[in-house]
Length: 154
Image 1 (cartoon, one colour):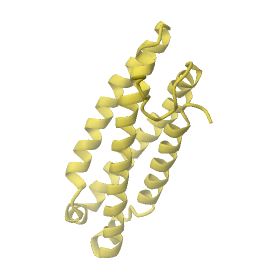
Image 2 (cartoon, one colour; image 1 turned 60 degrees about the vertical axis):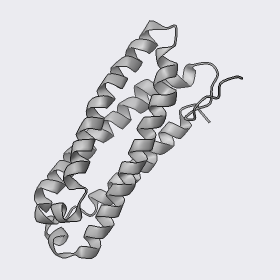
Image 3 (cartoon, helix red, strand yellow; image 1 turned 90 degrees about the vertical axis):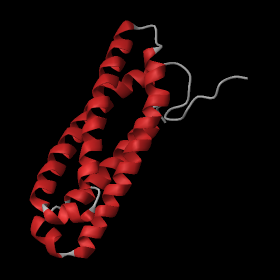
């Protein structure tokens, strides 16, 4: 498995959850179907947890390793992605704060659906870029284990 294999698996999990959420973006039904609203809320909680773990592992493993590389191009690409992810994380945090309560979704399902679609489009673009530009750089680096914190030699 490529070193980026665990990161790519995280992306797959995030995309699957996003797909399940997208299937439930029916504003009319969200106003009246408490069961669907609960399912949606649970899926959002799972997505938030998985995204948080993914970003934390990237911060602990991926970016430090890429930023230490001797190749200036690798460092520059890693720095660009690291800087951008902070903005995406902030947008997601604002989204999560706004919509983490089911009643907020029920009160304005049209706005929730529109914001969710925009956010997931941005997330999908980011995933595609990471998998085609960032992760191949990581895969070419020598040593280390993919997607897991490196153990220091004692």
